Image (cartoon, rainbow, N blue to C red; front, top):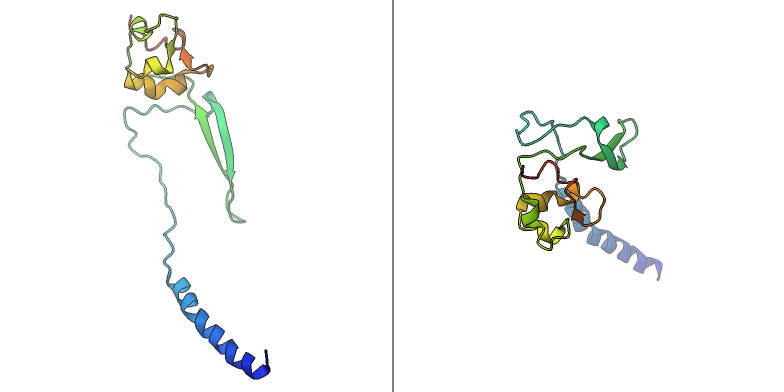
Length: 136
């Protein structure tokens, strides 16, 4: 490319980029997230000290230099408490002594809590695992 052609092409290239630069400056950035502690704990939420449960996962969040380090942990509850009552024999349709994930589906509360109760990760619940749920 010759020098006169380059002189003509350079201003055209810059002019073509101006709308892109202006558009990039006009893009609104979302406001930073703000969080606050839960002040009025619902009665259905049970508090548990972090030290009493088993940490199932932990991850460090990258923070800018000079800011406090942030660690997010998930903690398995030490027990499941609720006003749930089930008839084990009625749910154990195949009478194998366990309630499978499929059998648990007829009880929405049990189906929702199945993973938390299935501490052995076998896909089935024993009477011992459901001790607090069984009808007297």
